[in-house]
Image (cartoon, rainbow, N blue to C red; front, side, top):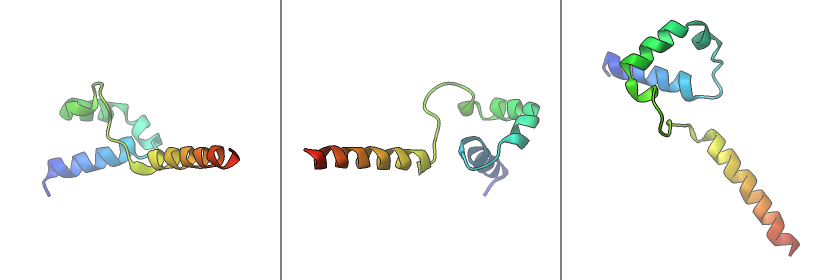
Length: 73
């Protein structure tokens, strides 16, 4: 695993994982900017890679609501 790859993994984990406290990352804003310059894919628009956590949560809620609506009929 190259150094570049390891950095990329770390940034993905820190920037897009809602469970990790981002205080450290916020404090070190300059580092964040440098990272953004290095991996320019993260700085611009477009869909950002997200974990499955929130999506699964919303899917579960939607499924429950749909189930109750169908059940009431």
